[in-house]
Image (cartoon, rainbow, N blue to C red; front, side):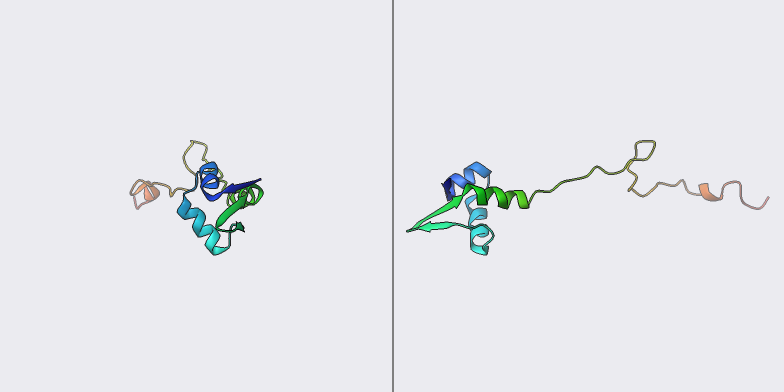
Length: 85
C-alpha cells in the first residue's frame, strides 16, 4: 500500500520536514507519479525499524546504586587507621 507524504507523516508521527530530508538524502525510497510523491508502507516500516534504538539497563551494585557511576569516597577514609601511631 502507498501513502502520500502527508499520510506517511501522520502515520509515523514524523514531520513533513523530516520526511523531506529522508527523501532528499535518498534514505527513504519514494514513487513519483506526476507531481505526487508516494511512500510504500513497507519501505517506511523498514526505514523506521532500521533506526530503532534499544537501551539496556545500567548494572546495579548490591545496594542498588548505579555500578557505572564513580564511587563517592569520604576524604581520609582510605588512610584511616593506617597512619603513624
